[in-house]
Length: 126
Image (cartoon, rainbow, N blue to C red; front, side, top):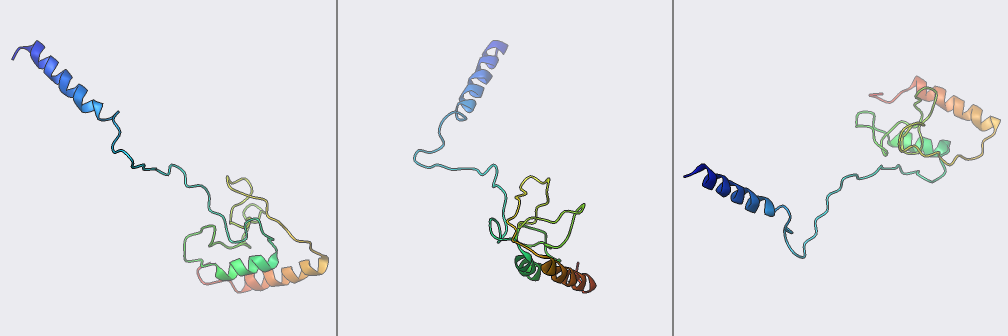
């Protein structure tokens, strides 16, 4: 074969092979690919995030499982900040300021006593 003929043959094969990239794969079938699934939020997202809600999340928390919006310690702190109702901290991408209830001094003292009790008796794996 002459080089000119071989070049034309290779060019024709490449053209035909690349044409399938622009043709629809199948008619009537639509496939989608999730590029971004979005954040996951916790059970108390957009609900009252008070001490009772935090205790419920804490009781369901499994320290031996991976951290997620449904599995985190709501009483842990990071640089003095507590997580929102989904376990995100201020400054993280999906942090949402939680809805907080009214509180008085006596409630604060009760919560402090509960916090001291939790610190004295941490969950296994914590």
